[in-house]
Length: 444
Ligand SMILES: NC(=O)C1=CN([C@@H]2O[C@H](COP(=O)(O)OP(=O)(O)OC[C@H]3O[C@@H](n4cnc5c(N)ncnc54)[C@H](O)[C@@H]3O)[C@@H](O)[C@H]2O)C=CC1
Ligand SMILES: O=C(O)CCC(=O)C(=O)O
Image (cartoon, rainbow, N blue to C red; front, top):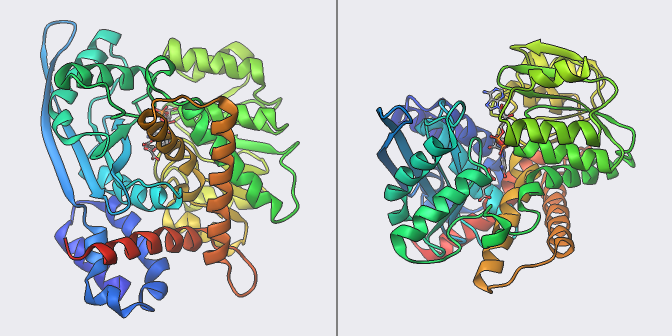
């Protein structure tokens, strides 16, 4: 396989899908050498079958807003690969959602899920519907309309969606209710469910906690303690909130967080009380992060990202391509020692190069944020056995999984000079498991 030729071919076939091509390019560039050690892969044209999703489902969603107007949105589900388990991955509701973004996310999910050690294939879905500014009733009607199409493609052994940007506990609840109504089945077909109806303990916390556990593993390779470190966090949604919670618990100091309008900088640190305020503001009142700055009298920067502030560590937890080359250079110039991605693909290829050239600790999302889907996998296990595990049990398993992913990155990513290329490590480890399963299952 020649990575550049495969990428050029995909670019020709999918000319309007830049995020998808970006994600594929990142992976192919790092697995090429390993792939070419296996002539049987090339003979089976494994790479093309792995890059192109198994299935793309696209549908119209019609719903009625509070004023009685009929609205339409697009709905999608990308079932990327199910060789190691049922399709699994979140749903994103955001006005920017399109095929390119969902195809990149589904592709990444396949490798991420492989890394978790659990039997889950990769998928992603969502809609260009934005819950922002909508009433609860509008969100409910939209979720119900979305499910009237999606339910045909789901099942506990077929495809198990969950949350992502714009889809949290509220949306998962409405989606689950409609699935149950349509099918008469109470099944583990969605994860991130409420604690009262089959949700796993620690699932809401898992992505953020898992990212901090992964970060601690990276720091440990340099004998660095997280205690006392200042941290730039972006986003203020699910991942950002529980990232900050774990940082505070471990004695680190988050000093920024953001939303799509801007970021706040609190040099004293966001403590437990201030985090409770953010959770209330974002999860209940659905307000803007600017209000934090007004309440606590700190700096708010409109229309900007937090990467130009000084800190020891950066944990991007908002969205794709939120750190560009210029921001990466600023982070390095300001002395950042580690970047660990809570979001999916938040760093551009140019930014990643800056981090790796500077030889800082840098973890890609598919390794560092895999704790969320891992606990989703544990939720599926609990649903299957009709049991609910304790917080301690789930957290211990999450710890083990993040340790295992870190060890695999070190195994496959350590370079001749001892530097751990976590991108290569994660991609090769994730790839090998999927590739071996594909070979065993024939050309299907
Ligand atoms: N929820 C989960 O379990 C997992 C989420 N992720 C990734 O983490 C990231 C955040 O997801 P969640 O916290 O679940 O979503 P969320 O909807 O709870 O929060 C998203 C946050 O990002 C901000 N944001 C969204 N688009 C933005 C933009 N264009 N510019 C600046 N800020 C923007 C929002 O204002 C919000 O604060 C996404 O990249 C998602 O794919 C990754 C693994 C699992
Ligand atoms: O929990 C899940 O199934 C999906 C999580 C997710 O969307 C992600 O890992 O990006």
